[in-house]
Image 1 (cartoon, rainbow, N blue to C red):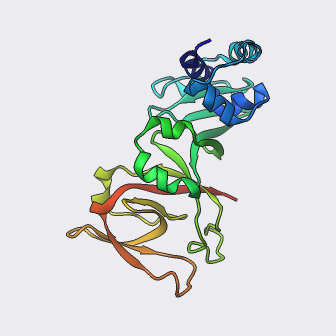
Image 2: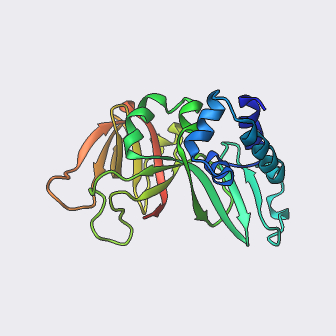
Image 3: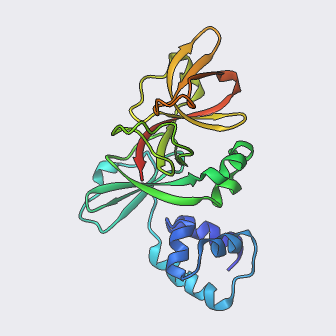
Length: 236
C-alpha cells in the first residue's frame, strides 16, 4: 500500500486520522507520518487493509436525498460540499470538524489555506440538530475575556463549533450571536462579540463579556480581517 493510497482509502472509508489510529492501536501522529511518506510496516499495512475494507461506506454529497436515510441503520456518514462530515446514528447527528488549538493559532494565520495544515489538526465532533450546508471548524478559547459567568459565556479552554460567515455578507452587519464571534485578524485570532459596524469605514467594535477593566472594547477594520466565524455551539 502506498502512502497516497492510504490517505485516499481512509477518506473513502469515512475515517478520520484519529479514528484509524484508534482502530490500528497507534497514535494519530503515526497515521500522519504514514500519509506523509514514512514507510508502513508490512504487519501494519495488512491490518490497515482489513480496517479500511471493513469501514468502506458511501459518503453522500449534499445533493443526495438526506431524508431517505434510515435512522435504524447503525451509522451513516455523508459530507456537505465543504467537506464537513456528518454522521447519523441512533437518530442523532454528529458533525466532525478540525480543531484549531490555541498553540496552533500562529500557524493558522499563515497556513489557513493549506490543506496539509488541516490534515495535522485533531478531529473533534459535536452533536447537532441536523445536516447543514456551510463550512465548519472548531477553535479553542484563549483567555477568560468572554467568560462573565453567564450561561452563554465560554471559559478558557472551551471548544467552539463555528460556521464561517462569507466575506460577501460582512457588509450586511453582524447580528447578535448567542455565543459570540471568532475573528481571524491578520495578526491574531480574536474571540469577541461584535457590537457595532461602521459600514462606511468598515470598522467593527469588539466587546468582551468578562466586565473586567483589562478587557476593554476595541476597534478593528474589516480590511485587516481574513475570516469571520459565528460560534454556534460550545463544549467544555
